[in-house]
Every structure is written in C-alpha cells, then in structure tokens.
Image 1 (tube, one colour):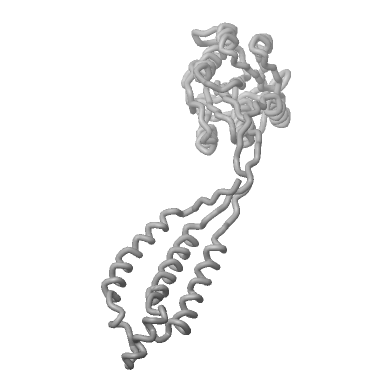
Image 2: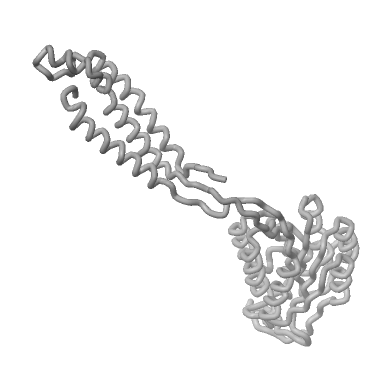
Length: 332
C-alpha cells in the first residue's frame, strides 16, 4: 500500500497566487500580434501555418507548473508505504501514596516519601502507553491527579507531593484505597490496577481497608500493596519546642496482615520494601506483571518524497528555457 501525505499542507495556499497571475497574463497576451517581433509580414504568415503560434503560452504554463511543484516541496511530501501490525501495552493504574508523618523516616535515602516519589516517577516514565493517576492519603484522602496519559504533567504533580499536604498526619489506608477504586471503577480498560504504598497501620478514616478491598474485587480491580520501612527500628524526625529537627529511633509498624489480605482478595501481590533498591525492584516486578496487549495497525516508517517534486520542477524550468531558446525564440 502506498500513500502520500504532506507535513505542512498550509503551503498549498500559495497556489492561490497563480490565479491573479493567470488573469494578468491572459489580459496582457490576448492578441498574438502584440508579441510578434518579426518585421516581415509573410514570415508571420509562415509561422502561423507552421503551428508554432499555438505554443506561445507553453512557457507560462511550464512556469506555473514549476511554481506549483516548488510549493509541494515546501509542503514536505512524505510517503508511508508499509503497514505493520504491532502490539502496544496499556492499562489504567492509580498510585495510592501514603503521605502521613511517618513517611519522613530516614531509613530510606533521603526519606521514605522522597524515595517513593522517585521510584514512582521512574515507573510512570517507563509506561508511556498507560493511563496513570495519583491518590494521596494521610488521615484523609484526595486525588492529586486523575487518570491521564500526559505523563509529564503527572510527574510534575508527583514531584510536588510532600508530607504536610494533608493536615491530619494519621493513616487512613481504607480511605486511600477506596478513593483510588472510585477513580478506576468507570474505566473501560480491560486491566485496572491500584498500587498502594504505605508505611503504617490503618488508624483513621471512615472506610475499613478490607471493605475497600471488597469493593475493588467487585469491580475487578487488582491491588498491589507495598509496605515501606526497614524491619525493626527506623530514625523518625522529631521537632523540639524550639523548632529544631532531630531523628529518634522508633519501632516500624506496618500492618502487613491487612496489606496481604487486600492483595490476596483482589488477585494482587504484597511486597515489603526495606530500602531504595528493594523498592525499585518491586516496581520493576509490578511492571513485568502488568502487561496488557492491544493490537494496533500502523505505518512502520515515513519517507521524505520532496526530491521527486524538486527534480520535476527543475526539469520543467529547463524545458521552458529550452523552448524559448529554440522553437519559440521567434514568437516570444
């Protein structure tokens, strides 16, 4: 299959300039006698009998065709002559990110929230065909970004995420999950996924985590849960009465039982991230697990075709010069 299309079709508007040129030409050359430069009358009659007089407009026509071809060159003609069946991968994903105060713990570099943001950004950048959104939760929950394929905007919004955006610093896992499910339930995608990242225990919110998981299961939404934090103790930031911040070792409390139940109920998986590298590996594993094939048919390659138009314009220009220098020399 062969098809020609133009990258800059607006240049064809220049062809409209030909119209007034034609009017001017016909008005000026309406009589052959005005252009004849032969002093001998019988020679004029000889030219008319030879038929050359009927070719007197050919140079102008050739010039207009040359102009049209040059306009086509400016419009950048391209051919697409090879269809190729390909498969692209795309699913709908909501990232549910815990931004409670404990996410400032320094057992990750530089802390849990920044590490989670960095790895999530890499994950988003590596899935250009997916619709991805962000839900944040602490003691409350809100949508930072709805499902979108504009990943540049999504990553910018992700970079703006920080602890303190939600005043209530407790952890409402059920509310965060329910909000993410709400954003996915009306999606038409065959595969819908929530990636829930938290470092704590559900201690706030009006929605029980398992109730939210049951809702996700009803809508066929798979939930991957990630528990973030070292095993044992971790340095947590503490502020004194003077506003100074220092780190104090505190026990890490992650309700792994609830997170495992959520993932099990929805045919997902539970992961435990104890450092930055482990968190990256978890996202890579989720990336491999979630691949939805979509068949598409598209052109495999475009080819620039302006050269043929340029050579044709050059050929017509030479033909005009040749005719005016030989056959039509005596009547132009």
